[in-house]
Image (cartoon, rainbow, N blue to C red; front, side, top):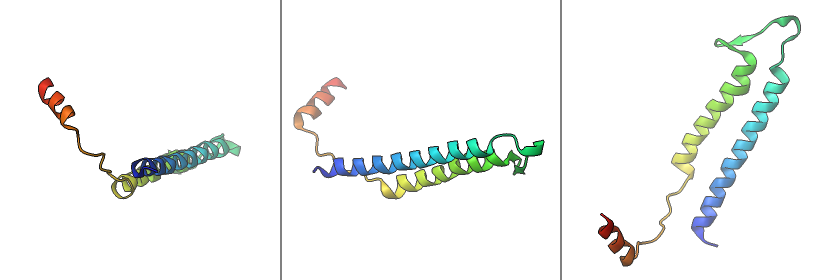
Length: 95
């Protein structure tokens, strides 16, 4: 199997797993805790309703941190091969 294909498939699988986990957590948490509290009392964390802070803000920050780590440490810049002489001539002619 082509190593470029294998790397890109692995990277795509990691992204899809993270996207699925984050989506299930966010929707599930907001569904369970985003409804009006009994007695009408709303708890706040750093000025946000608690369910927004823990159900939306925290997962976004975690996903942002993971994305930065993923882009800097996990993803690879694979060599795609040299351009053929014919492609280089066409590009020079177009410029």
